[in-house]
Amino acid sequence: MKSLGNLLQTGDWKGEKHVPVIHIEDTINAGELTELKVSIGDEIAHPNTLEHHIKWFKIFFKPEDGKFPVEIYTANFDAHGESDLFDEPQVATYFKTNKSGTIHVVSYCNIHGLWENSKEVKVK
Image 1 (cartoon, rainbow, N blue to C red):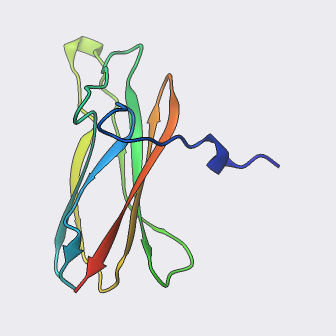
Image 2: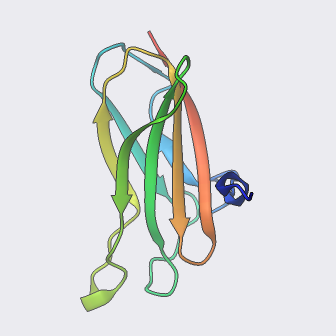
């Protein structure tokens, strides 16, 4: 059986325009509302045309002692030039946790497929 995990690509977001960039503090306060931003193309702009665009990304949190990741947010980007309207692959969301863990983000480019990135977050 083929695994979806084998199709996920990664890289350094500073040199690869498809990798999701995770903006969150390395250490957050337990039980407090925390801002999490995700974007694509911070260093190298990703095209946003009907022919080549980021279609979506999903954000997950996997607690250190958790068995499975929990989905925090799904972002869909549907305006790629229709009626001269363009959206940008970036969002901000907020969450609370009492546990340290890892933020995982998977994004989808309509030409270059699935990309992933992750970042550990400590809770104090």
